[in-house]
Image (cartoon, rainbow, N blue to C red; front, side):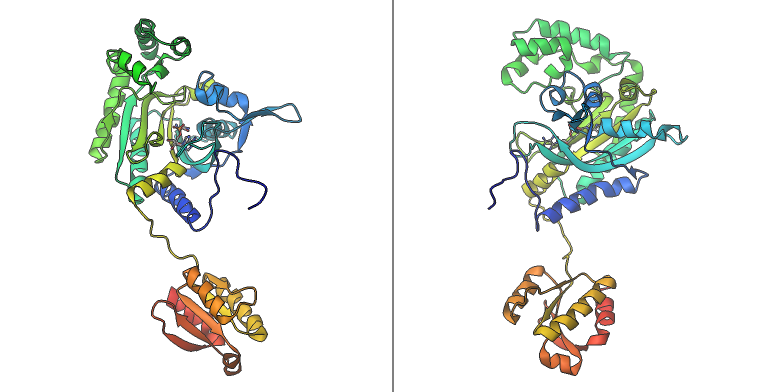
Length: 420
Ligand code: HAM
């Protein structure tokens, strides 16, 4: 124990469970890499205005949860609370949209920061893998992203998740709906904070989790009944493409999401084993965001899946990933000369691509074999004094317990072919 601890709402990833996090990131990104998405990485912080304008001045993320600070040089920055605004900013800055190949399809993986009240599944530092398809209005693109997320979760062995789907309309139909909703909400018995929200962002009130508010919301006008023809047709096409792909979803008219940039398609992946923090991922279309941050009109769609919550979902379903052992060979020298000689062999094995570890610290045979066992290695390679004089090492199969002498200068070739 040191004097210091990880800050509140954060935790460390440590072996052996950290391997699961890496495998989850890999599994989520694999379908994207297989579908034309290129890797993008942006800074961990941005101009605070990017998020204020992009995510929305009235959202909890911007008003309550952002780690905003002023640098010594007087710049107002914020640790990124999400990835979409940054990725779009980067694409615009590099003129990727002008290279003539729309949509620009990008994926990312990294750390995000929100000053939230910590609880299981909700952290102040968390990690997402995300995807953004920038510059095309095509229902097949919305469907593609939902299908790829579904594929990612299924490849991990998850089963108890559901896909909630909604359309938030566009700049044609949403304003009229917003007004109808405001009229309805102003007739309810709501606290001052919520009444303020009715003025600024009435759709968010639909998302209020409190039972007394939800009770009053029965009978609220539904966006579904206010969608313009274009939005309705677009949404129907997304639904049909998903059904044709065999991806089950539930229509959820109350799905609003906590970020203001969404238009038309919105969706969330929820897992039923996670309690209140059940959203393992979410996303949607954001046709107006580019213009909101000073770019040209670039209709776009994307999602981000939470790595932390995906790991919790695996635990909830009792899924253990089949992770390959990281060490194939564990080398155990007995005596000083053997140590020097075997260390040379270890270096050669590693150069040949064989994952090899070594008993460091002058351990005795018993402790060293224990370490070999713990490493999960398939083989132990033991070099004693007598072996040295005979020019061999003992290769022990850790599964069968069988042991055989192997000439020192033939080890790399032998292990290389056995482990291939
Ligand atoms: P989001 O719904 O805010 O969307 O976050 C996506 C996922 O990140 C959530 O479903 C959850 O799994 C995870 N997450 C969010 N906050 C926390 C937290 N405090 N602790 C642990 N996990 C968390 C976005 O971030 C959008 N940028 C998604 C998107 C991409 N929309 C379009 N493109």
